[in-house]
Image (cartoon, rainbow, N blue to C red):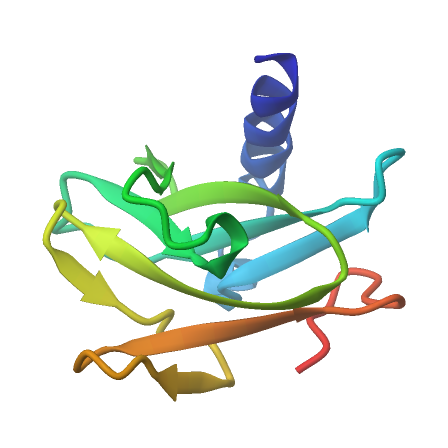
Length: 131
């Protein structure tokens, strides 16, 4: 509960930056005390009513990580705590449409007619994805 609140507080703090900085689709924070890095994902889909992040980080569980709409920025935002490694993910929009991250550099065919975005968390990310 408290860690989820802290993650969303962090995500919203990032959104208070200059609007020109919002073009990135994810930001990575330093490693926390448990060895996790907080990854904040953004999606520009003002037409959506609900957005979740799904992926290999939770074995593609039906229950994704809910993103919240920031009306001031016009973006969906969600945060994940991830350990070092490679992860595939996608956004589930309105509980039916699966979309890859449009800002991701790497994508991979999932074998079911969709693309998964790839996020690599390395040792020295320092605010940038190692892709």
